[in-house]
Amino acid sequence: MKSYDRYVVWLDYLDSERKRSDGRRVPLNSCTRAPTLEELVQACTKLGLEPESQASRYPGDTSRLSGYVSVKKAEKEPKQRTLIRIARELSQVRGQKPASQKKV
Image (tube, rainbow, N blue to C red; front, side):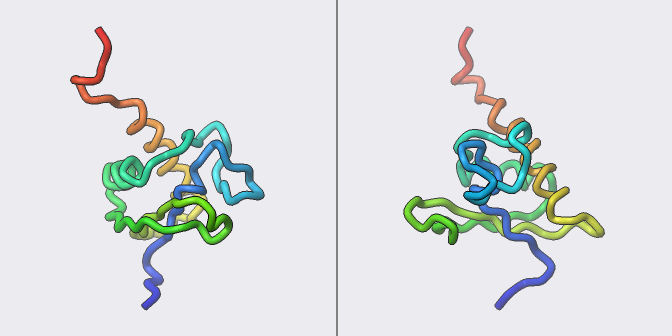
């Protein structure tokens, strides 16, 4: 059953390798190259959006495996603003590497 108190955020919305006509929904300067579902879940969790992830195929391009998260709607915040917040946090998550992977 459809939940009207949640947004669906596809990985394709935030992928800098996609064109707007292919499903990207945020500006290129806020996008991340080939984000993963795990990174998206981490970013949404840090923002307190209570993500529920699902691996699936994006309806606009069923040839590649993608995924989405369902996030809790922020009060009186449009989906576009939520997407931009997630995209910025996603680049922060991508920039943080565990201490064992950092080069000295």
